Length: 348
Figure 1 (spheres, rainbow, N blue to C red):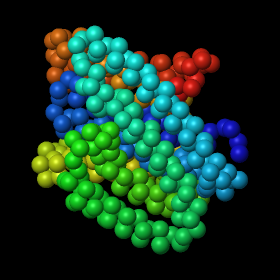
Figure 2 (figure 1 turned 60 degrees about the horizontal axis):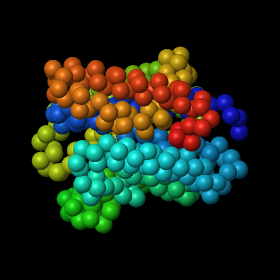
Figure 3 (figure 1 turned 90 degrees about the horizontal axis):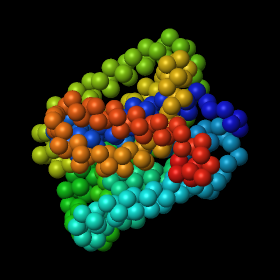
Figure 4 (figure 1 turned 135 degrees about the vertical axis):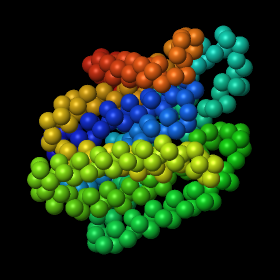
């Protein structure tokens, strides 16, 4: 296989810029006390990354490469789990070094740590993405052997069943306090995101079956498709903003079904617009978002206390400025760090 990134990979790299900025916005909004529905406007970012993890794991099976499922899993483990361990150590040292001198008890500091969560709020994604990759590598060859009609029916059944069970049965009954006492912090988030990862398996397999036909659509038809997907994304964001509050009371969650749809739409939009000159230019910075995603929480924790005394704290303007600053600094570090041999292991 060629080492040159394909148009599909470049398109996903471009999408990572929007996804990572959305994640930074969520965390800034939460720290600065903005409304839940304002923060929700960035939740598509994590969903994008989950679908992208399934997609990237599936790519070797589309091309019928000689990589075995075991080899794909080994490469994903190296890409996801090594940074997970290293960044968990970094955040543990940071929180212990900054919070113990402030008088926090060690028990309180480590209460939100665990094997599924790491030592920072966002690190849970790396082992979750690895688990999604393991399932994808095991099932994708079998799914690609199915007829398209069967895959489409399986996708619909998976969406209805998985979201119904999670939102109707599992999430309302989860004892988060009990999970924390068992060091299973963030297991609830795994449960909440599982329907997207499972549904993405069938959706990505359908894409794999259709990819050659989609590639023959032509630039103009792909552009029209991209415009339609972009409008659907904007409509979904608007619906999420206005529907979140009443639905939160109904489901007792952030109703990530909306975010899941939005993340899937964004990835589809990027694939539809692949080959576009703007997408190709943005992709140059997309790979820096791997590191930006991991480091942004540390930068935000460094500045959140000083920012609490700044006029406008809790308002939209300061939140937007903070998001731009943290995202920009994280992205700049993401461009620089891979060039330093001793720091490359920190980048997935």
